[in-house]
Image (tube, rainbow, N blue to C red):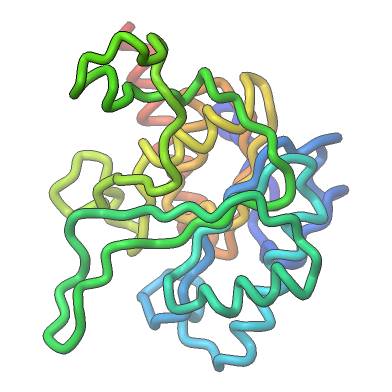
Length: 249
């Protein structure tokens, strides 16, 4: 099932079964994947507690399909505990690994017997395209040391990214979905690795973050999800958010 809402294409289906000809585009410039972590979260329309071997099979299928249908960079966000499996799949399948990125946040989920987890790995795969000028940040030479040697337009961020987790009190929190990446994190990926008009694919678009960021930044977005409920909620928010923004200008 295809829907085009506010210029965003939404497809109901399983990402591992999507082929490039089903997307209706000649080129996918950027792909972002944040699949469920198999931790028993309460998703609508998806079983998040599969047998370990079945989940490992899906990890491999998701990664291989992403690099098969994407012409540009692939960013794969995964829970820390699955890092060894993902690394093994990348190595054994010959998937180009461009860089490992760590998304860190200042508050993790509290734990009584272990240190609170406060990071999530994101693998940059497949293709090295980057647009540095779009995502440069002020350097310590500029803001801390007032060093005249500092580049005036800043520097590329480190590969450890500090963005807060989205908690229930945040304005951007969408309560219809149990997990959500920050919009600022997706802005960095979309700005840094695509250009206006490019096609950005999200294979697990559930919370809609990639779709909203792409709409804001002038990218074409294709969002895929197994849950018709989440796609319906994304369509509703796209209409409300960007219709209101247009009317307020």
